[in-house]
View 1 (cartoon, rainbow, N blue to C red):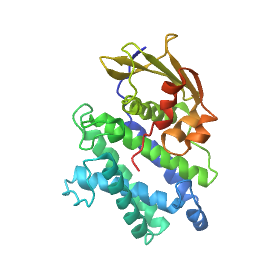
View 2: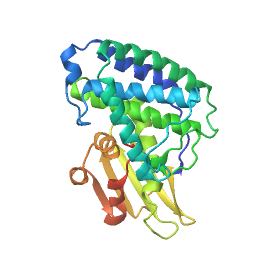
View 3: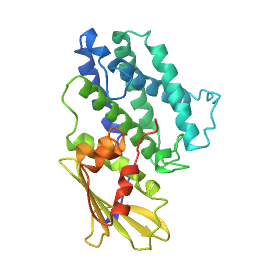
Length: 279
């Protein structure tokens, strides 16, 4: 085992965006209204949501537009989620005035600008936005950017599923998503008390899978890659179950039928509370 290392995803953005734009340009108009698993959002709504993410980043971070006055208490996790949900809902309604052709053009334009902006950010300097689902108060730029990558990948999968289009689940795409999502494990387990030296293992099977471990040290849980036979609990799940569970796409009841826990069942069951998205 060894401590997890940074995951640099900036250079994956252009091709990920191209994969989506190529798909969208092939769609007949009626396919834009197909429902997605992010109910009540349609394909059109999810594309508009991805555009909104680009616009917010470029406006508030690159261009330093003063932040909007929040009605919610964004200093709490629940308040921040409520704030983001409200912004998403407001944008979704307004974006229905935008044609699919124009959505494609705007997404292409802002994708390129976002990539160029991300390339200017020093990997290890503090990001403007901490990764709240990992419990961070301050995050390095590489982590914030990787969080953005997981968001774009996950929503593209929702779009592809709605259209019965091929999924992007090769190791190139899905392994970094899983590796980043699992950075939420120490925060997820923060209320699970155990003796120092307690070890938990998490194995994800499939082409994009791997092994991760949580080790209790100095009263804190620390994430590592690799596994050990000394684990008091071993959690195993396949890559498809993993990304859906971590992005609220799978209920705990359904996940329990697809996840195997060996050893301590209470410690192992913490995996069902892991969430790697905000809203």
